[in-house]
Length: 436
Image 1 (tube, one colour):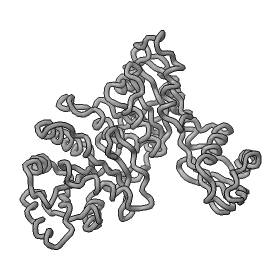
Image 2 (cartoon, rainbow, N blue to C red; image 1 turned 135 degrees about the vertical axis):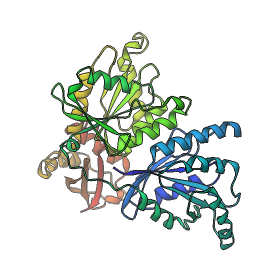
Image 3 (cartoon, rainbow, N blue to C red; image 1 turned 30 degrees about the vertical axis):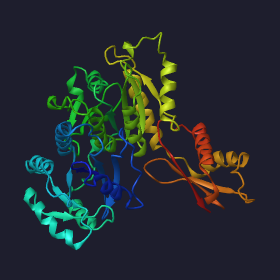
Image 4 (cartoon, rainbow, N blue to C red; image 1 turned 45 degrees about the vertical axis):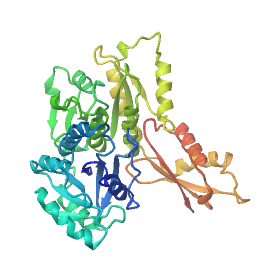
């Protein structure tokens, strides 16, 4: 599981520019996931062979300076809680502001690696102005220019060197499937896990996860045996007023990356909101299996909202990845909880299934022959061979004479046909077209 690096600082110091540079710098970087704000806030980056997640805490603060002062304090506190390393971005043009000093005061109390990135240092003259930032009392400073990329290499060298060493998963418990229970606060995550565990505590073995927050609870009852990665119950009373959307993204990232299947809890009384959709796409972008549990179904007036209407609304929101199981549950009445577990196990099995090359060609080549890719500029595209790649998640490659002319609509057609023939419900799949 990759480490988390948080970028903190007040507005307009260049956090987003620096963030965009990190997530777009290398070919191996995945697309960032759109957050609930206008700014992208989560992505993956890689440096010197180490992959890590990047969180930009910017874009959330609204209102006056008075409001901002409280908001940034909460954001920095949360970043300190969740991240393995913190990059504190300041602006060389403005020097140390009172808000910079306040953030530095919070950071000085921590033992985690903290890196001061002095941004907008794009000339030797400005290099002399960076020494002022040693007064923040946070150790070495790193002059950078987020726009041009100057100095970011030295900063990232130091960051990846300070990240915790990734441990190999070797124990029997680590080999068990991991199901992460995620969702926005108050969706019923704690109630769901408590209902599963019940009073018979002897069936539970607490296994420390690779992070302080992702605790694996082994569940071995009713014929099931897997690890539940619990993100519930860790919210502190002091953070009740914290921005719920920012909070749930931060909490979800680590749990999602640490799982095989994500059980997304949705509050039926609130509907499938923007933040639920955001967490769903976090799981999809990380190529995890997904099961959507619509919880608190016992509280919904069935005359006004039927199961079919609710399900159709969700599938409309998560399109085009609509091949996802949706289970309606109630942790109070214990309604369909075992069904939810059965569905999660089925998605896990779907995700790890492997199809032999000969059988895959027997199934898919007739589909291609019946509906070949449309000709472009008088050139006919022929697909002769296909196979599943030996990757941890389902990926398929089709070899063609002119793969560059195959467009997204045909790619979606092939995926839909593939899902009709094989059961990949709840599992994102990748399809590539390559030169034969």
